[in-house]
Length: 175
Image (cartoon, rainbow, N blue to C red):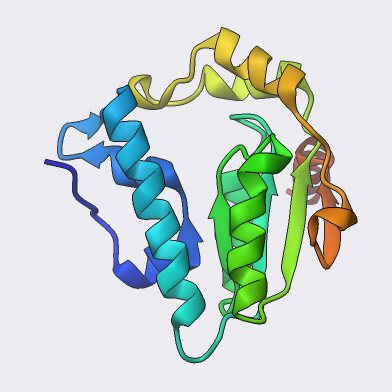
């Protein structure tokens, strides 16, 4: 049975369909479970948008697997705990449309957070993941090819470009 080993508060603020694939024995992925995970993520977003107080903004994370999205989400929530972050690849505009509409319906600003991490870095980071979280290389390459850059005309209030490699280099130079 799928379950969550983290609080609902965390789910509402950092929403990732992959969280709903976790089991006691690790992440399990198949077409049906993936479909259910996306449904649960959309439901979690709806509940978060209805929360009181209203979220300060919704960040939609856009980028390939291994781009640094989940790491960015965790650090952002430390400094902006009132935000809601939807953490998924969201490479196609059609994948983002319903999420943007839901936020706008509730008067919540939507920020596109576009990760420009190189394909090589995404592939290298993927190799560092636990076995049950590793993504097939061809899937990452396909996401890279399919990526549609976000546009303000989609309904975003702002587009934030994140170069995860530059962030890592800056952090390394501080250590």
